[in-house]
Amino acid sequence: MTTLVSAPSLPQRLRGWLPAYGVYVAIVVLVLFNIAFTDNFLQWQNLRIQLVQVTPVVIVALGMALVIGTEGIDLSVGSVMALGAALIPLYLGYGMVPAILLALLGGLVIGLVNGGLVAFVGLQPIVATLAMLVAGRGIALVLSSGRYKDIRNADFLAIGTDAFLGVPYTVWVAAVLAVVVGFVVRRTVFGRRLLAIGDNRPAAELAGVPVRRVLVTVYVVAAVLAAVAGVIQVSRIGSADASRIGLLIELSAITAVVVGGTPLTGGKIRVLGTVAGAFLMQLLTATMIANNLKDSTAQMVQAVIILVAVYAARERRTR
Image 1: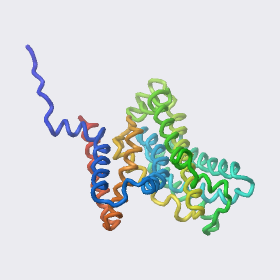
Image 2 (image 1 turned 45 degrees about the vertical axis):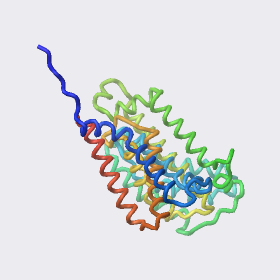
Image 3 (image 1 turned 90 degrees about the vertical axis):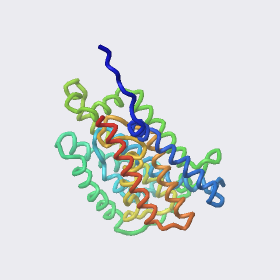
Image 4 (image 1 turned 45 degrees about the horizontal axis):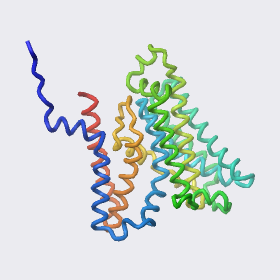
């Protein structure tokens, strides 16, 4: 007897389509709106500002996407940025390269602690990284004595202000990192293991995947990327303020990942979608400001977008 399978209904098709492509449609709609109603929107100077402002969020979100792909979360990334910012002025007198390397080393250490707590101690990621959120910023404030510090090293400041082929160095850095992360996720054994852990950790362990090693590596990569974002932020604004740099960026990064189509349940990572999600949130905020709407309005709209994205991803996962 032949069994007839009914075609999926329109709501079902939309739920399957929305997580993958909804962010790109939203960006197109916002761009068209701004072309029509926002003065000077297409001027390169305006576009450059938007790109530079979103760069730290993109870099942090790339690391967050890897963590979420394992069904984890990292709330400490903003504190890692602050720690990197605090280390830069302390060691910039020894040269730009040593200062940057020490900032990245600080991120690596935080990542090792996060990964160790999750993989070996067995703490829930939200608990482990929440502890480091508090501890990391506390260490940063101690290192900086709680004071705002100006940066006067011209070579270091050039990272955040100069450009190559008209495109800021920081944007090039974010683009290269996005390509690298995309390649790792799609084309490497590590990427397949990462997704296997997020999809079904017990099955991955039975299959011989080195789960603990992969988890530690993922949290280290996320923290080092956050440190990179901290270095870029300090070079762009020309100062190190451990109390403010990276503040709440973990929420922006999680938003970018979720809106970009990566489910919080793990097992799937959309790298391009993550980048697009960060741009969508940046463009939405800029659009609200340019049209004289309150920042609170932008936050409410962002909240609605997040709820829709999470709901759509949940529907797709549970079918």
